[in-house]
Amino acid sequence: MRTSTVLQALSRREMLVRAGLVPAALALGGLTAACATTQDPNSPGQDSSQPQPGGVIEEQDFDDTMIDAAFVRNGGWGPSRYGSDDERGTLNEVTAEKTAAALALLGGSPVRTYDLSERLFNGFPALATPEAPRIYEQRLFVSGFDPGPGFDGILGPTTPRASNEFSSVEERFPLGGTYQIGTQLDNLNHIAVGDYFYNGFRGADIAVTSGTTKLGAEHIGPIVTRGILLDVLSDKQEGPNSADLVQAPNGRYALREDYRITVEDLKAALERAGVARIEPGDVVLIRTGWNQMLYSDPKRFTGFYPGVYLREARWLAQFRPAIVGADTWGVELLAGADVEGFAQCHQEFIVRNGIRLQESVMLDDLARDGVYEFVYVLTPPKASGATAINAGPAALVPA
Image 1 (cartoon, rainbow, N blue to C red):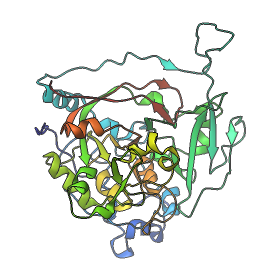
Image 2 (cartoon, rainbow, N blue to C red; image 1 turned 90 degrees about the vertical axis):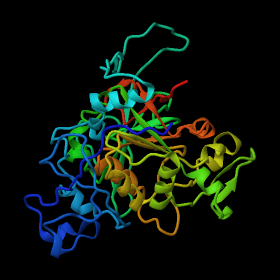
Image 3 (tube, one colour; image 1 turned 90 degrees about the horizontal axis):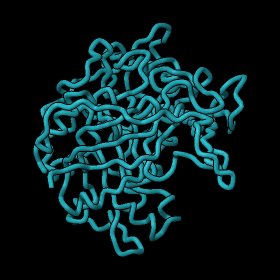
């Protein structure tokens, strides 16, 4: 399917100057003192004076400049273009018009989306079964900052990881369960820079025993929008460099563990798909083939994997997709000659831009049938304060 939707994306600028910041703090992303009052060259663009979704995006290029954690902690990534109280990030781009444009791929018409799910909360009433109780009792696991007095959840190290100050929060359940497993959608309260979360929310202000009081999964809501498959694996299989590939025990191929998916790879996959551009509110799913390891070599699956790095994350983020996902368990490259710090792309996508990440998505059937553009549907549970949700998306195409 190679039709294009009618929506295009607005250019976005980073708000770089905050009251109380010294000019030296504006060195984020390669920004020099000479251009401290203009655009950060590695900013996907954020202009709080233009808060409306949609529009036309002028493509920019980016590099791998490491995240300046002090700049972020001092407010350099806030407020969100969607408002200082926003908790939904780029899901704001999935407007009624965006949904209608997506459904038009099926020959549909403008629609209204009704949320029909109940909100999950601790103590949710359920049928009593004493032998195997149905219990929903969520606890928050905090790592990288001190949540402050009154927190009775699970506290890990209070020092952030690596120089980019990677911090995270996740939920746990009485028997050790978590939403951070399987086909999942990372939420905006999952990752921080120090104690700085998306849109300037601070860890000590939002972390409570059962989850977070802001940015939780209850703010996601049903999603119906355009999905795009970027089949990097097939491009590489048809190319001349077999060194980019590895064979799984089941005989199928994947990109190798430390393969960096480049901007050029992503552009080639867009061309393969016949899709002119990524637009605000799209869901962009990247196929690497790494899911072939899931059942044939599970230990290898949970190790390092192919993925994007900072330049690619920033390039993707400028288009304001609702979600970026992959068939790996973490989307971004975690090992290789280019990699510094720890999980900086999670910080770029989630903390800086309000873009959720979807992990362990099964994309082989779409690739087999040559489906690159489709209607993406997800109806997540309303788990209050949860840092991720387990809910498999669907892709709809004409029969």
